[in-house]
Length: 634
Ligand SMILES: Cc1ncc(C[n+]2csc(CCOP(=O)(O)OP(=O)(O)O)c2C)c(N)n1
Image (spheres, rainbow, N blue to C red):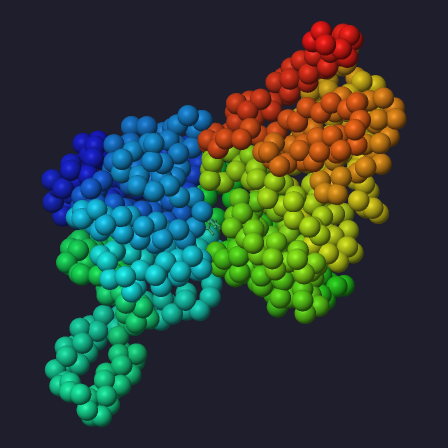
């Protein structure tokens, strides 16, 4: 690491010559590989942008010039070059560096990302504020071809294309989203990429066309038309040019001198410019280069053989969803499956292999995925939309307006619900109960284990109404060992009888409930544990039964924010039914939770078994004491 250890900020970089920059690129690759093999993280995307990031920091002056990273998962090189090399070993660890841009971490992190396709909108906002304040600097959005499948990127391109402000869009085209990229835009980019003659043609054609005379007569119109049709035939990136951008490219994203030359040219352009950079995802490490999907996001792994990457196999819940749905679809031709660019992560690749014609990868387009599903449902299909909890946030209105309002039979398989760990605040799936619970017509469920997920899937198909099933990434042996029967109604399940209090637990919190109960039993408190598997509608029968049995201290446990969550619905019930019930709602507090292991984060928010038991026993002591005291003395 002869060079890298002397690079503390972009100014150091600018002292290097061409040969040094190339050596530095190799050192950075090794550094990322070594560190990510220990911490886990986004490997392939970062290995692909080493030269691009060096060139950006070489040509531009961050943080005066503002670089905005779309999704932000490819910002590791940027972090290393902007004074965070020495902390890099803490990447994604509790209280360590985030795996995404964070404004609080560095003045070079201009805008926080995590969800896709936001960079051009954010950059345009920064550009307009700059212009209104009469300031002078460059603003760049670096967006991948995958992120460009998101509608929001096109809303921003459309908006920026006619505002005529100086804005640079760097399109990092590696032909991959997490899986191979999809859609017509990907095909268009591939056409540009695969024809290197385009580059040379472009300059020649433009020069020739410029020599045609133009007047105000019909002849001039004909010439103009001819120019345009020639352009369509020969000039790459004409789509972007028509949208109002100066298109530069395609440029080899691993050729540092070419990149530097092209970026210097882009700097001179007036108005919006789009630089099309072609990179190879996973570049420089044999395993990630040959299989970039598997090395998109990895757990710690062995560099020598590439083993250990957590991405190798579908997670338990995702696999249970994908495999079972594929089997159900054998006998039900109405079933269709939709993913927004995550066929492996959601387990739908199993479905894709078995029923390719009923499988749809729509790109990073969650809103479209949901309304597309609504259309399928309106025409007799039974679509299952599998999207991570955090990304489904985008499609709130489509769920409400297009699916639930029309009471269409769309099933939402909401993966990665709850705290997700090292990806941090942009990715925790802790809001879905709150953003769904108040929508009419929808049934919301949370399985305790993979068998119950499969039973819920079957039940949802019978419901023929909007339904959501939320589940985390992993299950545990303890939970998997709990028996599960097919559902015949929207009822809860009593898992353990108790005398004093009732714990109403949702999904993964059931295991925590058992662990807390063990501690409470030792303190003489006997809790009933109820699997509150149907979050909406709540099971009034069980609640009434509890009141009749004089079990009136209820504790709700959920891995969702407490505001508007499952516990809120139980508090509302207790209030409305005018019962002596007291409710303690335990869940994620109303703040954004940082990154770290799920265990560390649960402890930090007091959802670990010891904290849960302590909070419950304090509640029980207070409420029993209050009840024992004459009114007015507490
Ligand atoms: C709204 C949203 N949906 C899904 C994701 C998950 N996701 C993270 S990166 C990624 C692929 C991005 O592809 P691209 O922009 O081409 O970047 P690359 O990883 O290829 O460098 C996806 C689908 C996300 N971050 N945000």
